[in-house]
Length: 118
Ligand SMILES: [Zn+2]
Image (cartoon, rainbow, N blue to C red; front, side, top):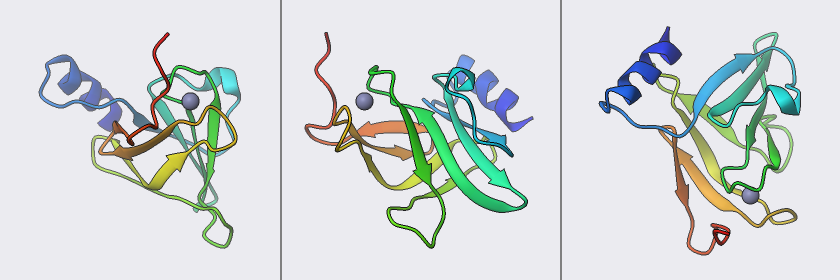
């Protein structure tokens, strides 16, 4: 319901977001990740992964470990509209170089962290 409501509110321009949480019990296949999705993998009540397509249009899939015992690790929370907030920032050092925050469903680019538009 939250996701449907969020999309409706975006359509009516009441709220805005780039990404919405979609819950899954299993690690998603690349082809099953929509551009607007961040897949929140929760298996048996344990938060495991957050997976999304890089918003820099490079097409890379990003998998963030939510395992608090490992490094690096991230935390993902979402509001009642399923808009995610991820901490800390996401920096693709070994990949496309994209560097951004996700706050209340919006992608916020760090200085120099956005790839040049083609
Ligand atoms: Zn990228």
